[in-house]
Length: 322
Image (cartoon, rainbow, N blue to C red; front, side, top):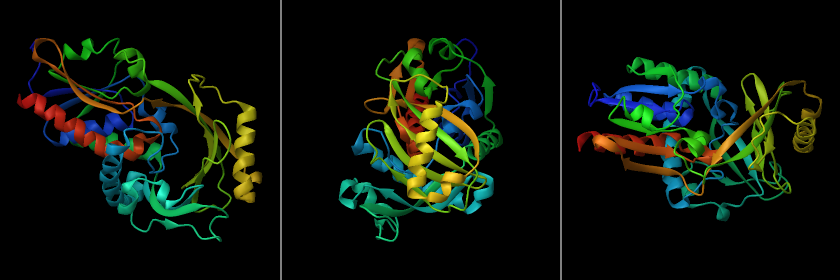
C-alpha cells in the first residue's frame, strides 16, 4: 500500500476526541500519527467548560453507555488530579429533575435531588468529573507519546490525503468534518465564556433556565472560575461579544453574588460541533483502506470521549484484521 505499514493509523484531529482515540489505539500496539490542524491548546476542547454531563448530544440510546464508560475512567484519573487535570467536584444541575434524565443517571453514584439549601428550585446534586482541559490535553499528549504515538502539525484538505499514507484513518475532525467529509449536517453552536478570579466558589452550577440561547453555569478550576454561557446556533464568530460577557457575569452573580466583583482574566469562544447524532462508523475506501468516523459530539465531547474512543478503536482494529 504505497509503502505504508499495515499497523499504521492516522487520526485526523487533535481535540479531546482525537487524542483519546489515538491513545487507545497506540496502547493497543498500533503505530499512530495524529494530524493536528492546530495545537490542542487552540482546539474547541481547550475552551470547553469540561463538566461531565450528557449535553446537546444524540443518540440518547447510546450516549448513556458512552458517558458511563468515560465516567469510570475519569473517576480513576481523578486520583491523580494534578497530573491528569481531572477532579471530582460537587454541584447542582438546576431546573432538572431525576425523572428528566436518562437511564444513565441511575448509574451515577450519589446523584440525588438538590435540597432547598443547595438550590431554590428543581435541581439534582451530583459529584462528577470536572476537567481542567489545558492540563488534561497536555496529559493525553504525553500519554500518547509514551505509547509511541506522534502528533504532526498537518492540515488535511480532504480525507483522501491521510488515506494515501495509512491503511486506516480515524476522522476526529470535529467542526472540521463539515468541509472535510464533507458533512453538511455538522454545524456550530457557539459558546462564549468569561474567565474570572475565583472568589471562593468550590461547587459547580449549571442551568438552562435562561430564555433563548443563553444558559448559566460556573465551574471552579484550580486557578480560575469559568463562567458561561451561550448556545448560539449556526454562529461561526470566534470574537467575544462584550454585551454577552456582561450578561454572563450578571446571570452567574444572580446565583452566587460574590462573582459580581471577581476580576476578569480572559474571554473565550468555542464552536461546539453539533450533529443530529454522533457518527461512529466504518467506511470502506479505495484500495482496501478503511476510514473510521468519530465526530459530531456537540457539547459533550469530554463526557463521551473514552466511550466513543473505545468504539472507534474497535472499528479500527476490525478494519486491520479484515
